[in-house]
Length: 343
Image (cartoon, rainbow, N blue to C red; front, side, top):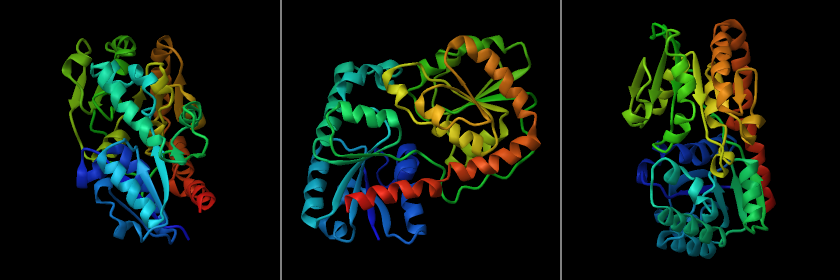
């Protein structure tokens, strides 16, 4: 039986659960492993001492980047004889793609600085031979980067204890479209569909934005309600209460590697979603998702999704099935097979 320790390195420190990536890639899977009878935990990479690592068979570095903390943890893993893996859910290990990252496209950071960060992630890749990635596109990019070791696609998923939020009376007077950006780096993604949203302005439809966005990003749109931050639980509750959610992505290399986690969460609380198409979105396509490939398709797709949201009885039957399909428990055998091959 394999025991696993996840090593995170985020700005949240001891509150890594607040980091969406760590939550999906580390905490959800650690919890599922524990439920299956395996030993698992999540700690900061800076706390990875030999004494702690000695208690585990496998160490999974979450989005590792070359640093003193990383070098020390790698050395301690080798001293403890623990098998080393890396987990990536974004295309951050090859500086060739830095220009298409949200840091450059939306946040306006200096490209050279972002390339340096990507180079440090690539340097960490060179120290590891076993990888978990969230999408097939990331697997292919790791291969192009020169990785010859084991690379397993382990999709993002719902947590094991996921339960649909308690349904309250719809709190919006009009049909409501919800946009839930997970970070500040989505202004260009949102801008790509502003024209379609503006066309809906005269149709008695509200837009709820939940997440860190600047007012200038949605300037010119009417009927906008903006909540800068909510907890994960409140996010799911609001996601359930809107009629349709949206996940726009501009078409570039970075976004082609993105996972369908927004789609998974939305349809699992019974809310239809309109999303930009990439391969992982296609892999998770279902009756409650509409995928678009051009800006011109958004207006029509939004209308179809709003109509779909009205058939609540049909959606309730589909929602329970989709929750089972996208549960971390349904993905756990993939992780267990990966660990067994590395044993």
